[in-house]
Image 1 (cartoon, rainbow, N blue to C red):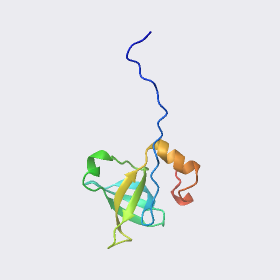
Image 2 (cartoon, helix red, strand yellow; image 1 turned 180 degrees about the vertical axis):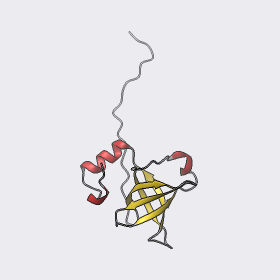
Image 3 (spheres, rainbow, N blue to C red; image 1 turned 90 degrees about the vertical axis):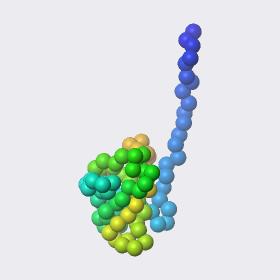
Image 4 (cartoon, rainbow, N blue to C red; image 1 turned 30 degrees about the vertical axis):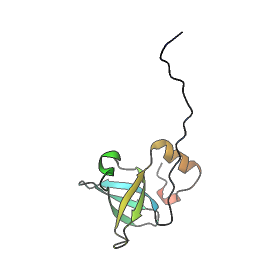
Length: 106
C-alpha cells in the first residue's frame, strides 16, 4: 500500500461571466507596457490596460479570450482588463454559445 497518496477530487471552478457593463474581447496584438489591443463584442477595437495587481497574475497572449470593462470616459477607445479565460473556461463558454460569433476564432 502506498503512503502519502492524494485522492483526486472533482473540483470545478465557476466561470466568470460579464455583468451589465463588461464585455468579451479577443486580444489582437500586444503593445507593451501592460497594454494590448482587443476586438470587442460590439465590433470596436479598444486599447486595454492591465491594471495594478493583475500585471503579474494574468499573462495574456494574442488570441486569448478576455473580459474587459470599458472606461467611463473614452468608452469607444479604452478599457480595463477584468479576467482572462483559461482554455478550459473558454471551451465552456464556446460550448454554450455565450460569446458572439464575430469573436469565435477557435
